[in-house]
Amino acid sequence: MDKIKRLQEIFDDSNRIVFFTGAGVSTESGIPDFRSQDGLYNTKYKYPPEEIISHSFFMNNPEEFYRFYRDKMIFLDAKPNAAHLKMAELEKAGKSLGVVTQNIDGLHEMAGSKTVYELHGTIHRNYCMRCGREYSLQHIVDSDGIPRCECGGMIKPDVVLYEEGLDSSVMNGAVRMINKADCLVITGTSLVVYPAAGLVSYFEGRYLVVINKTPTPRDGMADLCIYDSVGKVLSQIEVRV
Image (tube, rainbow, N blue to C red; front, side, top):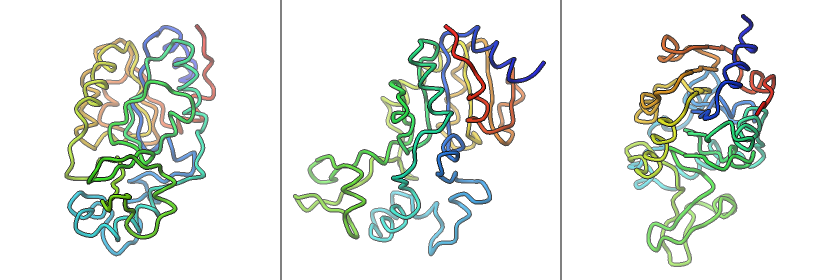
């Protein structure tokens, strides 16, 4: 059977779809992923990207961190693509419970998704490490060097850096939603970053679907695997209530 037709049947038969998304969902919006040939981890920089986006590097060398962060991790012109929009449409129609994402770009919310668990935080929230005051992404972009609060404290993006733990309330919410799903769609992720990747183990529903350009560790357990761009795939799906 044609895989798009099979995916349509699975979605038609499901009412609690949950999407588990990674960087590959946003590449069609012009945001590079982490591990592909042109991804963030393959760029040439003074320090390895894994080191730069670690908590200890941020604390010890914040100016260099922000130089990299503004250059490589903020994409102000990025807009939601067909994948983000279809996921939001399915949620609005009552077919999807929401999204669990490893992405920090905020494109799911921009597309209209209401229930989004951002496992690794978001570039759109920033806070003073001294007084806790919140700042916008634009404030980070417009500031030079190390962004500072009015109180003099250093501002930190609300993103989970290496060496930092994931927010327990976000993790718990994601686990509950995945556990309630009757269909889990894994897409745009290599499923190698833990603890986030381990959340799919909480799925006990009927249909496990993988839509990804490359194989994942969960393919052997999936009811359907489609190796293609998720925007191309989901744009062919009709939302039927």
